[in-house]
Image 1: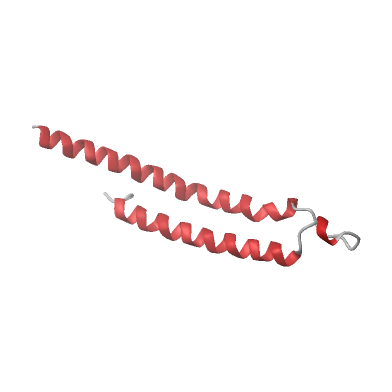
Image 2: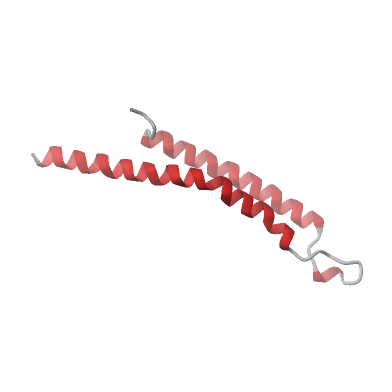
Length: 89
């Protein structure tokens, strides 16, 4: 009797974890959008004071790193979703 109950509890816990991972995957594009828009708020370098702002090259490196990080996060979430079998009947 306790074996069946333990299996049911494990199944419910796995379903809850799978749902949280799926929710994380749904939030990822919004997180990416916010991270991509952050360089707009950075102060720009002016010709008068070069040390006061952020160079364009720094912003482009930041965008590339964020882009690569989002790809890695999406890959990791996809593998976890596949492991939990979310969406399968």
